[in-house]
Amino acid sequence: MTLTQTAAAPATNDISRKARRVGTIIGGLVVAFLTIDAVAHLLNGETSRKGFLELCVPAHLGPISGIAMLIFLALLLFRPTAVIGAIFVTGYLSSVVSVHLINENPIFSHVLFPVYLGILLWTALYLRDERVRAIVGR
Image 1 (cartoon, rainbow, N blue to C red):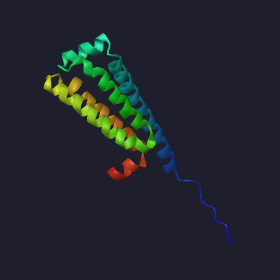
Image 2: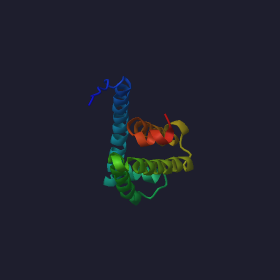
Image 3: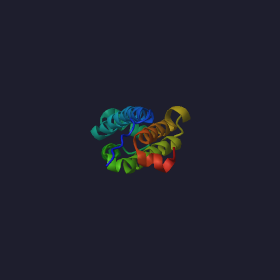
Image 4: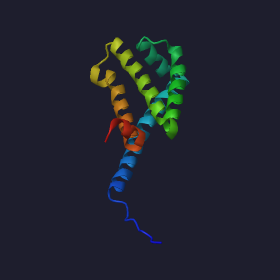
């Protein structure tokens, strides 16, 4: 019987660890921002209600959207459901784009801001999750 010894993992593992770390940091920032936003909607404070009304969205929908986002974020944070959570968050963000378009808000600061968040979210997931990498390709 012979024993074979495998060499230490090549430097690609270091890159993978770095990619996962960067993905975790980017994803954490996006999730933190969206969590703060969701909690603000859930609490339905004066600022949140005023913001909804300025966008011609009934203020009573604030807590509902906050609950929905918190559920989507919970799915996103749980590895087996991270992809479906990201899909739900992307759908939510697309509705925000629509609302800003309908209200003719500035393109780069308002309309595209949810797109920026979505790009960061999917980039973070790509860096962390082999399933996303397999779909997108390397």
